[in-house]
Length: 477
Image (cartoon, rainbow, N blue to C red; front, side):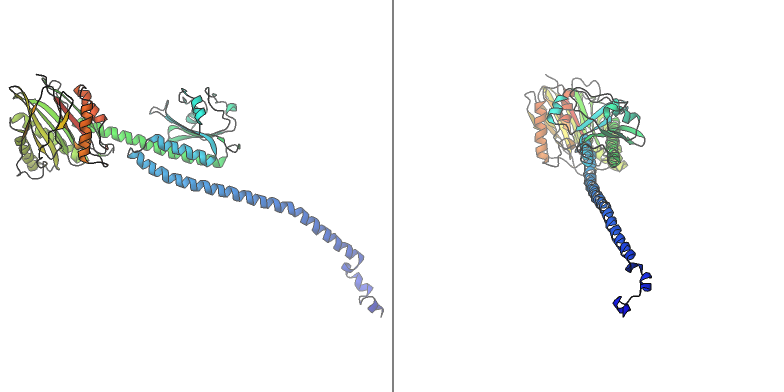
């Protein structure tokens, strides 16, 4: 009974179960208190971990946003690179996009890009971004940076530069009058294959924080993109220069003395650098007191066209000087000769003779699929000497060729040109001819050398083909 009243557990047995003794109760209470304290200790840690995860998620989202923006920029840069090569936009437009992208990706208030000249000594192009209208006005008249101070440091020490306090840096050279205050700077040199082209830098993060390693990585990548754009543009210019020089070496020099005529010619290559053309011109006095003039265009835009142009021009020179015959007869003989001894491509041409008459001069010409001559009179009126053109050279040697004649008034100017001067993809040939006639009339008073240059400079074409102009001014009687 005692055991039953004792709830069925003997004392000795209770001693073997501490959890049921007063001491056991105490341990249970202690365990509860410990668990409670542990829970309270874990709460701040869990909150801190949660806050870290949120912050990390925000930063990762920001990075993802920047990467998406960088991908879009890459597509834009690719399109702009193609436009630069086609000369549809200037290099400064591409560089401006790079600077603005750099500012957006790192959250900077200001940004700029400086490009050195070919010698690497002076700033040739400077692209600042982020300046307000007032800040630009305050800097009015201030010269480009000269590559000293921290910008010079980036050039002389071609590695990324992060500065939290510009004025504290030992290479800081201060700012010119009117320059907005700047404290922080992140820059990277622009270099390709070890050659320094300039530098890209940003200043003043909008959130007031210093630039970090992630910002630095983005600026380095964009500086590389700027280097590629500059390198491509300079390679384009060099290729274009070489093509123009090569073409000019093939063209003849007009005789220094062509009295009583005044003659001048001008040439400009296509804007696409690898399109070496087949345009040529020539003029010479022939033994029968006449002046012979030729303008021609070999079909094609490659070295073969340039070589064919040289062959055709040299054969024509020999025929012009040796045979005192009509332009149509000379072109027929040239066509047969070219067809027999070469495989030259199709060529358009306009051959003319300015022949003395009792009371002036007569223009006698023959057209082989070429634009007509343009006549400009002393009253500054321009008109085309239209005539049905014969077939180009190299098509059918059996077809007859015709001569055309027109009296030339005293002091008139006869202009011969290739179709590259008037062709434009947005309007017709007829409209191009009208525009050229208006340009000629507007510059009629110029000396003949300045006149042909004005036609080249103000041409109505899209510049996708090379162009040549030859002008002969008739003496006053």
